[in-house]
Image 1 (cartoon, rainbow, N blue to C red):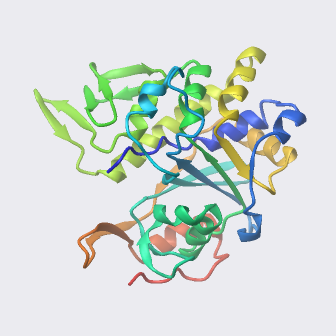
Image 2 (tube, rainbow, N blue to C red):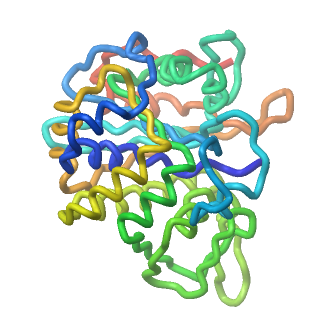
Length: 317
């Protein structure tokens, strides 16, 4: 496939926007996605749909991390990082939705991968997520523009690697096992990795989990970066973070500054319960390798994010 998306880190980005005391004027400058008409009222908690896109819009060759972004021509904008952050009574849960999940596209009525529903816009993606049984109350997305700059403005992140690791497609190259400090470029290569390999007993071994393995790495990254952001008190650093994210962040038209402040406060210590949507791999009649919801496990999992706010999810054909 073409280059994968950087992980969407809108959870911590909204923390920067809100809990880290951005001025109201600055907050009002953030672009809005007109999607609130697709939202479902909250029952017991709030779900934030976190989306990462591979748009290169606004990236210049002179940008510090441009080499990680501009290596492949990508037209338009796609998403292959989709997460739902659920916050309730001070608790945080993070559900990853695989990009290859096979769903009905709300705009066309045709079956396809859930990440392709974003082609028709964020409202269509929200409807697709809700159609499988997860109500959404807020939405945010980030593209490559902000990704590397935010990591660098936060001073980088530390990730613990069990083995030397690499991905020649994304550019990841970790020479030693143990804690490694990643700058923006290296962090992007880490979360983009779909061909992740580890050096075990002198032999490079590919992670057999493919997209599901990448989801685990994205959650590790998200936790590390969010804790860096929320533990930062230096005003200059906070200002740099705000500037770093401003070019590539978009939030929904219903999120106000007070909502963002409340979100930031609830995430001041970010240690979410991480969940993966139960799925079963299969090959379609057309030869595509996709993932179906594994029932009843998927319904049980999604109930933790919706309190039965929606009916049972439909069965994919």
